[in-house]
Image 1: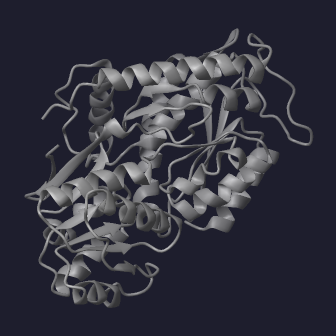
Image 2 (image 1 turned 90 degrees about the vertical axis):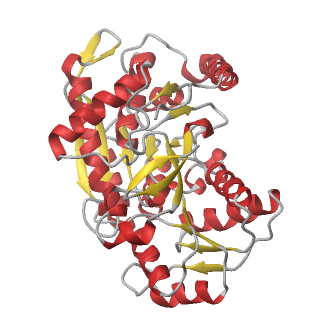
Length: 408
């Protein structure tokens, strides 16, 4: 099924944002044609002519279900960009990645970010698929004034903006996801809604925005049950949900917890519909017993989920089709996870090209002018908005016979 065409009003809004941001750059940047500005005092600059990016991902530990997928996406897009290099001023630079496994540990992620900036002299950072690891990197990146593009869910990553001037986020805003879920639930005539939310920052965003969204559509928010850490059993939480006798359950968390939570709910006796936020989708979400537990479940997710973008012939859709083809060639299949890392790489490369520099301050300034259609969806950065996923890049999907099918 083809993805819907872009809304003209949305495109106009993106153009206005880009124009406003470009105007503000005149005071933010100064020398527009400079090749490189002086590095920050006490920071070692990366040698050679590469655009060097520090990457901290959850390749092991609780976040590996998401982190491994982002590393795969990153390497595919790196090959494409390095085929011709990135024109930066009077040089054509290759992109070099310094990838670290943060083992899903926030302290290790912060340590890696510090070393990558101070010793590795990277020009920008990207990564962090878990909110907690991403939040740890945020503190380092902001203090050391290094642009950081986060791949994690949680609105607090880029807020308050005055304290996050070097920080950008690619995942959808929680409020946009919650509104879509609430409207869907209301349209199906359901009333009693229980929220099963992850602990931590991502779950907190879900609790706040789902409660507000349900009220907006005339529904009274029901019970809120928090998931324990992944090392603990999900059954006590699932049993508390079932005891509330909900018509519908929203699971607001990240993979692989989402699949395990769905299994626990079914085994505890919940037979009603399940609804997932975009953070819960990864390749393993519909693997094994998860598929049976999630059959008929709904999710709000960027437009790359399933095969819905593959029949469109826009330039963005063709780029997605090429990405999916190469991903399948290399890894044997593509489940539709959101390849935010690919888009992060492209956004930073665009910023370097437009800034004619790899200076960190100039990269930060030009990141906030980026308005592009990426692999996962569309982004509209601006000086007043560092969370870039456009709400019109989201779709509603249902699990049908073990696969994702777009329904709106």
